Image (cartoon, helix red, strand yellow):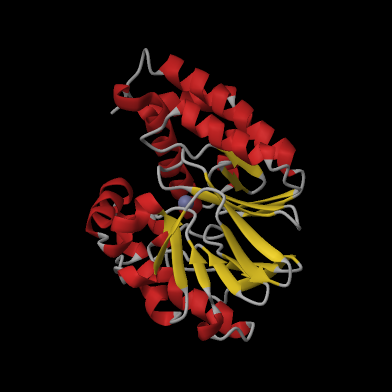
Length: 303
Ligand SMILES: [Zn+2]
């Protein structure tokens, strides 16, 4: 197993760059460790990434008993597939997630089946989703605050869009926004949409507006890393959502083939040329996620 890399992105926030044994998942799984007097992990990655996560904690002398919260931005398998594993391995951690994730955390069978259907082999390589004991779960509410001590407070905002059970976190004192996938993803510096089915334009846009109101300074993506000029990035994401929406819905009137629609999209959004410079495993990952984003926007009109 390749060693995880640990990046300090703010005095009290570390990005844990994990290397799960999943082809193409390089620079993709990056939980954040946020430390005041108490410690919170934001996302964990899938079950296959948990050995790498525990190794990373060990590397920075963080005792597994000292993680007080694990907050899931949402419960897709690449973020929360390891929920049951961390509930076992981090014995004092409360598992914080959107209330709509509650049932899935206790009984992840439907989540596993949906992951298999959408991700196929990636789901199998991500590993099984184990249940979380119900008494460990805290349902997140909008504006909930996690006080980590030393003046560090994590504010939770419900930001549905990428999924119905999505939330983002904000450290107001530091201006740090952990957006999850509410502001899309940023791969090799290029922002792209993350709009899988069921996509709703108004829900997605109003979540980004909520994040803009917070006036963050720095934006940390689940995929991948932290960047300055957070407000510019959020505005750019809104522009891009509208642009893709226009292109995809228009192309979907004459084609029900998502690969065909991607060709049209690539002609119009030259940022997608980043796809030309990826190794083949990362390219396959990106392609399947972009096709899924096209399916989200085009709705039932594509196959
Ligand atoms: Zn994700």
